[in-house]
Image 1 (cartoon, helix red, strand yellow):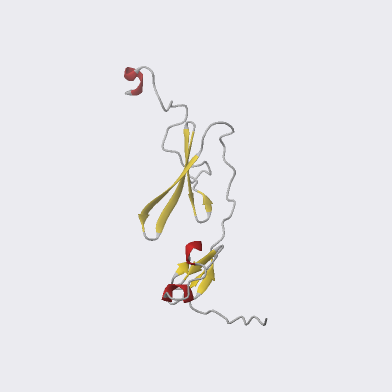
Image 2: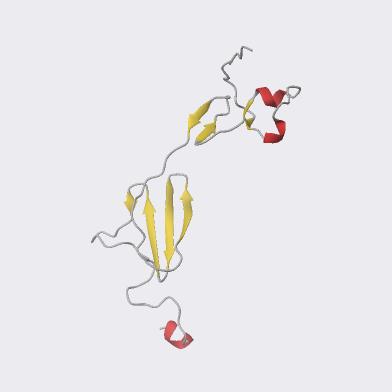
Length: 124
């Protein structure tokens, strides 16, 4: 039997559930894809490739957990923050955020502990 493949140009329904396979009575089946990988659906129905990622810098924490969080100060001023043991680093679109002398920006003074067992020592 001959199988005809028709081009699809409208994907406004996005990625469809496998439960909808074989259903031809719903309109969303004709406007969706069974599988989308690294693709974004535009509001007009087309598809475009998802933006890639880039390795900016290796983590300076060799052991323990490192957490990345975004910080959006305004629409044009966004940062990625790296939280690791005793250190917070800031990244923007061009890489690691540095001071004017070339050292990384840090909210903690050098040599200052992040957690104190003696509260009177932390308040100095």
